[in-house]
Image (cartoon, rainbow, N blue to C red; front, top):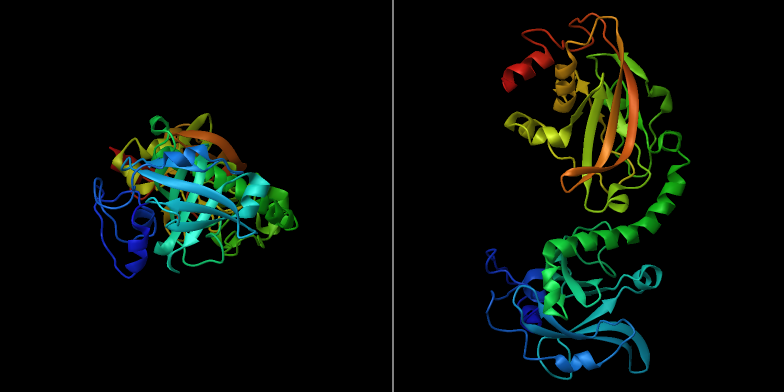
Length: 398
């Protein structure tokens, strides 16, 4: 939050910062412009303790200290100006009657959800966006985004990243660092998205696929039956969904969620578990057990803002010679139990995953897999000693 005026004059300048040089100034860290490192010149022009004697309707006015540099800054909420209601946050980096920046309050965020979000566009580019959000009384997070000019703050679907934290009491930094502020920011944005998501869900319930499978997983004999590049228009046909397949044949599946993950579980990403014959495999657990699984089981962090996966997942897909290694590991663990002619229940669960653990299931489904005699026609060999999926996995793990 330092040298905003200087930054406005140098909007065309692009400067690369090292991690050690980057700090918390609005112009530098958030607007992506010129700034100094810790201990550098500019910003924090003395004490603003007199601000602490003022009161306002928002309770945000006061002297604040930057987490990254410890310098003092003044923030003052102004409800009316010149006889008109303005609802602005005045930012001071040096003493004087005129603030260095006036940020607008997103009023309906506050009236509906009590979220105090202030914003200003220094320029029309993403690097020219300035946003401050109160994450706790007396604690404000400084945000950068990835979006260019918008009539108002950047949309709720934009990426917001906390770059610094400001607090009235320096002792607050014992609790509030950048990571903690990011987690709280995600929760606040999630609360704002919930209202919008409820409206979307009401319309989604009109679609046969979503309305009949919300909270469940639909299976099909190919990804083409479940693929859908349209957000909030699940037009796939329920007639193409299956409940039984041959073990080793292509099986695609698609989850339909009660709410987007970023709304129901802010900060989480997706995990998948497979269960059969008393055995369970977990993608996130397997990712940490060996380099083989780490390289072949990527984190699922897309579609967190949607009510379903745009592109379905697969257990195995013989048309593209692809497979989920977590599913292959389940077969490897169960291969001595599988008998030709047997029919086995496979349960697939999509989880909200965060902080190293599965939090809640967000969709699940079960399909029956029949173990018929293997051939090289419609399905991939599973246990062939040379070409089988499982045999190849065993060799790599060994």
